[in-house]
Image (cartoon, rainbow, N blue to C red):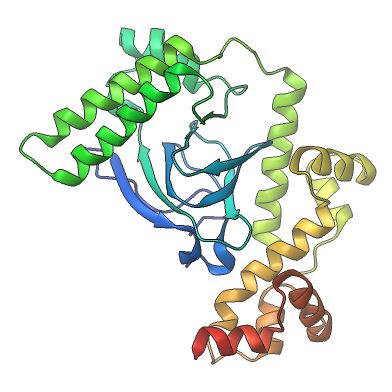
Length: 295
Protein backbone atom coordinates (compact mmCIF):
# COMPACT_ATOMS: atom_id res chain seq x y z
CA UNK A 1 0.00 0.00 0.00
CA UNK A 2 1.09 3.56 -0.69
CA UNK A 3 -0.65 6.94 -0.57
CA UNK A 4 -2.13 7.82 -3.96
CA UNK A 5 -1.37 11.34 -5.19
CA UNK A 6 -1.89 13.36 -8.34
CA UNK A 7 0.91 14.94 -10.39
CA UNK A 8 1.16 17.73 -7.80
CA UNK A 9 1.60 15.29 -4.85
CA UNK A 10 -1.91 16.09 -3.61
CA UNK A 11 -3.45 13.07 -1.91
CA UNK A 12 -6.44 11.69 -3.81
CA UNK A 13 -8.24 10.18 -0.83
CA UNK A 14 -11.40 11.96 0.32
CA UNK A 15 -11.39 12.53 4.08
CA UNK A 16 -14.86 12.06 5.49
CA UNK A 17 -17.97 13.06 3.58
CA UNK A 18 -19.28 16.27 2.05
CA UNK A 19 -21.79 16.73 4.88
CA UNK A 20 -19.29 15.86 7.64
CA UNK A 21 -15.70 16.28 6.33
CA UNK A 22 -13.81 14.43 9.05
CA UNK A 23 -12.18 11.01 8.94
CA UNK A 24 -10.58 9.07 11.78
CA UNK A 25 -8.66 5.95 10.86
CA UNK A 26 -6.42 3.47 12.65
CA UNK A 27 -3.11 3.08 10.84
CA UNK A 28 0.21 1.27 11.15
CA UNK A 29 3.48 2.13 9.45
CA UNK A 30 4.10 -1.46 8.29
CA UNK A 31 0.92 -1.32 6.21
CA UNK A 32 2.86 0.83 3.75
CA UNK A 33 5.35 -0.51 1.25
CA UNK A 34 8.85 -0.15 2.60
CA UNK A 35 7.37 0.79 6.01
CA UNK A 36 7.01 4.46 5.06
CA UNK A 37 4.62 6.80 3.31
CA UNK A 38 5.91 9.21 0.69
CA UNK A 39 5.78 13.00 0.62
CA UNK A 40 2.31 14.33 -0.10
CA UNK A 41 -0.08 17.11 0.94
CA UNK A 42 -3.80 17.78 1.25
CA UNK A 43 -5.87 20.86 2.10
CA UNK A 44 -7.29 19.20 5.21
CA UNK A 45 -5.67 19.37 8.63
CA UNK A 46 -4.24 16.09 9.90
CA UNK A 47 -3.61 15.20 13.53
CA UNK A 48 -1.64 12.04 14.26
CA UNK A 49 -1.95 10.33 17.66
CA UNK A 50 0.61 7.58 18.32
CA UNK A 51 -0.89 4.62 20.18
CA UNK A 52 2.00 2.15 20.04
CA UNK A 53 5.67 2.27 19.09
CA UNK A 54 7.60 5.17 17.55
CA UNK A 55 7.97 6.75 14.11
CA UNK A 56 9.85 9.47 12.27
CA UNK A 57 7.63 12.19 10.82
CA UNK A 58 8.55 15.02 8.48
CA UNK A 59 6.46 18.15 7.90
CA UNK A 60 7.95 20.71 5.50
CA UNK A 61 11.44 21.20 6.96
CA UNK A 62 10.53 19.91 10.45
CA UNK A 63 11.87 16.46 11.35
CA UNK A 64 10.21 14.84 14.35
CA UNK A 65 10.48 11.69 16.43
CA UNK A 66 7.02 10.66 17.65
CA UNK A 67 6.58 8.25 20.55
CA UNK A 68 3.67 6.41 22.14
CA UNK A 69 1.25 8.94 23.63
CA UNK A 70 2.49 11.82 21.46
CA UNK A 71 0.37 13.70 18.93
CA UNK A 72 1.26 15.85 15.96
CA UNK A 73 -0.81 18.69 14.51
CA UNK A 74 -0.19 19.09 10.78
CA UNK A 75 -1.45 22.35 9.30
CA UNK A 76 -3.33 22.67 6.03
CA UNK A 77 -1.43 22.05 2.75
CA UNK A 78 1.84 21.06 4.41
CA UNK A 79 4.13 18.52 2.77
CA UNK A 80 4.57 15.50 5.00
CA UNK A 81 5.95 11.97 5.06
CA UNK A 82 6.59 9.29 7.67
CA UNK A 83 8.83 6.28 8.22
CA UNK A 84 9.63 3.46 10.61
CA UNK A 85 11.93 4.02 13.57
CA UNK A 86 14.58 1.37 14.31
CA UNK A 87 12.83 -1.37 12.33
CA UNK A 88 9.85 -1.48 14.70
CA UNK A 89 6.18 -1.04 13.84
CA UNK A 90 4.20 2.00 14.92
CA UNK A 91 0.43 2.17 15.35
CA UNK A 92 -1.29 5.53 15.20
CA UNK A 93 -4.67 7.16 14.74
CA UNK A 94 -5.10 9.75 12.02
CA UNK A 95 -7.66 12.55 12.46
CA UNK A 96 -8.14 14.39 9.16
CA UNK A 97 -10.69 17.15 8.70
CA UNK A 98 -11.62 20.20 6.67
CA UNK A 99 -11.28 23.26 8.90
CA UNK A 100 -14.60 24.55 7.53
CA UNK A 101 -16.20 21.97 9.79
CA UNK A 102 -15.32 24.29 12.68
CA UNK A 103 -15.83 27.78 11.28
CA UNK A 104 -18.55 27.31 8.65
CA UNK A 105 -18.21 30.53 6.65
CA UNK A 106 -15.08 32.59 5.91
CA UNK A 107 -17.09 35.66 6.89
CA UNK A 108 -17.54 34.33 10.44
CA UNK A 109 -15.73 35.63 13.50
CA UNK A 110 -14.57 32.07 14.20
CA UNK A 111 -12.61 32.08 10.96
CA UNK A 112 -11.13 35.58 11.09
CA UNK A 113 -10.27 35.64 14.79
CA UNK A 114 -9.39 32.07 15.71
CA UNK A 115 -8.79 30.00 12.57
CA UNK A 116 -7.17 32.22 9.95
CA UNK A 117 -4.13 33.20 12.11
CA UNK A 118 -3.22 29.49 12.26
CA UNK A 119 -4.42 28.24 8.89
CA UNK A 120 -2.63 30.93 6.90
CA UNK A 121 0.56 30.99 8.95
CA UNK A 122 3.23 29.32 6.80
CA UNK A 123 5.66 29.59 9.72
CA UNK A 124 3.43 27.20 11.70
CA UNK A 125 3.43 23.94 9.71
CA UNK A 126 3.04 21.63 12.70
CA UNK A 127 3.10 21.24 16.46
CA UNK A 128 4.44 18.26 18.39
CA UNK A 129 2.44 17.40 21.52
CA UNK A 130 4.99 15.53 23.63
CA UNK A 131 3.86 16.48 27.13
CA UNK A 132 6.64 19.06 27.52
CA UNK A 133 4.08 21.75 28.39
CA UNK A 134 1.15 21.47 30.83
CA UNK A 135 -1.47 22.31 28.21
CA UNK A 136 -0.32 19.40 26.03
CA UNK A 137 -2.00 17.01 28.45
CA UNK A 138 -5.33 18.82 28.08
CA UNK A 139 -5.00 18.73 24.31
CA UNK A 140 -4.19 15.00 24.27
CA UNK A 141 -7.21 14.26 26.49
CA UNK A 142 -9.43 16.12 24.03
CA UNK A 143 -7.98 14.25 21.05
CA UNK A 144 -8.46 10.83 22.65
CA UNK A 145 -12.00 11.74 23.71
CA UNK A 146 -12.68 12.86 20.14
CA UNK A 147 -11.49 9.49 18.82
CA UNK A 148 -13.64 7.61 21.34
CA UNK A 149 -16.72 9.62 20.38
CA UNK A 150 -16.16 9.05 16.65
CA UNK A 151 -15.69 5.31 17.06
CA UNK A 152 -18.64 4.90 19.45
CA UNK A 153 -21.19 6.11 16.87
CA UNK A 154 -23.55 6.82 19.75
CA UNK A 155 -26.61 8.96 19.12
CA UNK A 156 -25.53 12.48 18.14
CA UNK A 157 -21.85 11.47 18.19
CA UNK A 158 -21.13 14.27 15.70
CA UNK A 159 -21.89 16.89 18.37
CA UNK A 160 -19.45 15.24 20.76
CA UNK A 161 -16.75 15.10 18.08
CA UNK A 162 -17.22 18.81 17.34
CA UNK A 163 -17.19 19.64 21.05
CA UNK A 164 -13.77 18.04 21.53
CA UNK A 165 -12.36 19.38 18.27
CA UNK A 166 -13.41 22.95 19.11
CA UNK A 167 -11.95 22.59 22.61
CA UNK A 168 -8.69 21.34 21.07
CA UNK A 169 -8.59 24.31 18.69
CA UNK A 170 -9.20 26.71 21.56
CA UNK A 171 -6.16 25.28 23.36
CA UNK A 172 -4.13 25.58 20.17
CA UNK A 173 -5.18 29.21 19.69
CA UNK A 174 -4.50 30.19 23.31
CA UNK A 175 -1.16 28.46 23.81
CA UNK A 176 0.63 27.74 20.53
CA UNK A 177 3.36 30.14 19.44
CA UNK A 178 2.00 31.38 16.12
CA UNK A 179 3.49 34.87 16.22
CA UNK A 180 6.56 34.06 14.14
CA UNK A 181 6.11 35.14 10.55
CA UNK A 182 7.74 33.32 7.67
CA UNK A 183 9.99 35.57 5.61
CA UNK A 184 9.38 35.99 1.91
CA UNK A 185 12.64 34.12 1.29
CA UNK A 186 11.47 31.16 3.39
CA UNK A 187 8.11 31.10 1.60
CA UNK A 188 9.93 31.10 -1.72
CA UNK A 189 12.13 28.21 -0.59
CA UNK A 190 9.08 26.19 0.45
CA UNK A 191 7.43 26.83 -2.91
CA UNK A 192 10.60 25.76 -4.73
CA UNK A 193 10.92 22.55 -2.70
CA UNK A 194 7.30 21.72 -3.41
CA UNK A 195 7.88 22.41 -7.12
CA UNK A 196 10.94 20.13 -7.11
CA UNK A 197 8.99 17.29 -5.49
CA UNK A 198 6.12 17.77 -7.92
CA UNK A 199 8.55 17.72 -10.85
CA UNK A 200 10.19 14.52 -9.59
CA UNK A 201 6.78 12.87 -9.17
CA UNK A 202 5.88 13.75 -12.76
CA UNK A 203 9.23 12.70 -14.28
CA UNK A 204 10.85 10.04 -12.06
CA UNK A 205 10.16 7.31 -14.64
CA UNK A 206 12.11 9.06 -17.40
CA UNK A 207 15.52 10.66 -17.73
CA UNK A 208 15.79 13.21 -14.96
CA UNK A 209 18.78 15.56 -14.75
CA UNK A 210 19.88 18.13 -12.22
CA UNK A 211 19.89 20.70 -15.01
CA UNK A 212 16.21 19.97 -15.76
CA UNK A 213 15.23 20.37 -12.10
CA UNK A 214 17.26 23.55 -11.61
CA UNK A 215 15.80 25.08 -14.77
CA UNK A 216 12.31 24.17 -13.58
CA UNK A 217 12.69 26.29 -10.43
CA UNK A 218 14.90 28.95 -12.08
CA UNK A 219 18.04 28.38 -10.00
CA UNK A 220 21.58 27.40 -10.88
CA UNK A 221 22.46 23.74 -10.26
CA UNK A 222 24.71 24.36 -7.26
CA UNK A 223 22.18 26.56 -5.44
CA UNK A 224 19.40 24.09 -6.23
CA UNK A 225 21.40 21.28 -4.58
CA UNK A 226 22.34 23.39 -1.55
CA UNK A 227 18.76 24.55 -0.99
CA UNK A 228 17.34 21.04 -1.27
CA UNK A 229 19.86 19.52 1.15
CA UNK A 230 19.43 22.35 3.65
CA UNK A 231 15.64 21.93 3.64
CA UNK A 232 15.28 18.16 3.24
CA UNK A 233 18.46 17.06 5.06
CA UNK A 234 19.23 14.75 2.15
CA UNK A 235 20.98 15.34 -1.14
CA UNK A 236 18.80 15.72 -4.22
CA UNK A 237 20.57 12.79 -5.89
CA UNK A 238 19.97 10.48 -2.91
CA UNK A 239 16.34 11.58 -2.68
CA UNK A 240 15.68 10.74 -6.33
CA UNK A 241 17.30 7.32 -5.97
CA UNK A 242 15.24 6.53 -2.85
CA UNK A 243 12.07 7.84 -4.48
CA UNK A 244 12.57 5.67 -7.55
CA UNK A 245 13.20 2.61 -5.39
CA UNK A 246 9.91 3.26 -3.55
CA UNK A 247 8.11 3.59 -6.89
CA UNK A 248 9.52 0.22 -8.02
CA UNK A 249 7.88 -1.68 -5.16
CA UNK A 250 4.38 -2.08 -6.68
CA UNK A 251 5.94 -3.55 -9.83
CA UNK A 252 8.14 -5.92 -7.85
CA UNK A 253 5.00 -7.04 -6.04
CA UNK A 254 3.44 -7.99 -9.39
CA UNK A 255 4.86 -11.13 -11.01
CA UNK A 256 3.77 -9.97 -14.45
CA UNK A 257 6.71 -7.53 -14.42
CA UNK A 258 10.28 -8.74 -14.71
CA UNK A 259 12.97 -7.18 -12.52
CA UNK A 260 14.18 -5.37 -15.63
CA UNK A 261 10.69 -4.01 -16.36
CA UNK A 262 10.21 -2.94 -12.74
CA UNK A 263 13.50 -1.03 -12.81
CA UNK A 264 12.54 0.71 -16.06
CA UNK A 265 9.10 1.66 -14.70
CA UNK A 266 10.87 3.34 -11.79
CA UNK A 267 13.21 5.32 -14.02
CA UNK A 268 16.36 3.16 -13.97
CA UNK A 269 17.97 2.52 -17.35
CA UNK A 270 20.35 -0.13 -15.96
CA UNK A 271 18.85 -3.11 -14.10
CA UNK A 272 22.18 -3.99 -12.49
CA UNK A 273 22.53 -0.48 -11.07
CA UNK A 274 18.92 -0.69 -9.88
CA UNK A 275 19.71 -3.93 -8.04
CA UNK A 276 22.77 -2.42 -6.36
CA UNK A 277 20.87 0.66 -5.19
CA UNK A 278 17.93 -1.47 -4.08
CA UNK A 279 20.14 -3.70 -1.93
CA UNK A 280 21.93 -0.69 -0.48
CA UNK A 281 18.64 0.94 0.58
CA UNK A 282 16.50 -2.10 1.39
CA UNK A 283 19.08 -4.59 2.61
CA UNK A 284 18.11 -7.27 0.10
CA UNK A 285 18.00 -7.80 -3.66
CA UNK A 286 14.88 -7.01 -5.72
CA UNK A 287 14.33 -10.74 -6.33
CA UNK A 288 14.57 -11.49 -2.60
CA UNK A 289 12.08 -8.69 -1.89
CA UNK A 290 9.70 -10.14 -4.49
CA UNK A 291 10.02 -13.63 -3.03
CA UNK A 292 9.25 -12.31 0.47
CA UNK A 293 6.22 -10.33 -0.71
CA UNK A 294 4.74 -13.07 -2.88
CA UNK A 295 5.51 -16.14 -0.78
